[in-house]
Length: 119
Ligand SMILES: [Zn+2]
Image (cartoon, rainbow, N blue to C red):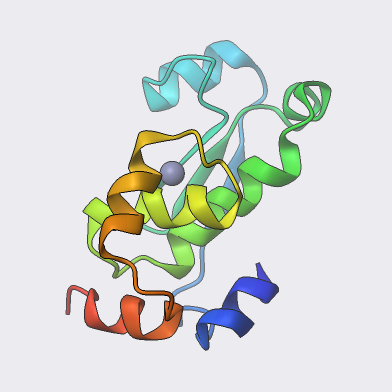
């Protein structure tokens, strides 16, 4: 994530993020309404994760956490580009959102983020 901040010339948001690790998959599903294929969610400065040992067993703990932290860092970026940019950065190129992002991205991360910030 710090590599991202560096390359995008961004600093951490002034509003801190809370990370909540659910104790089991049932709680994750009840809390987020998400299927088990989704490792975590970010919304309004809160990250809710599947239990850490589940994510570690799947080999995706670091990736899921980084993905959700990037939503925090990019909290003001237009929704339509958030997933695409994050998947692209984390090399999840097979996701459809990446194409949508790359259609409008000219290679300058900082400029792209600033010019697509909602405020
Ligand atoms: Zn996401």
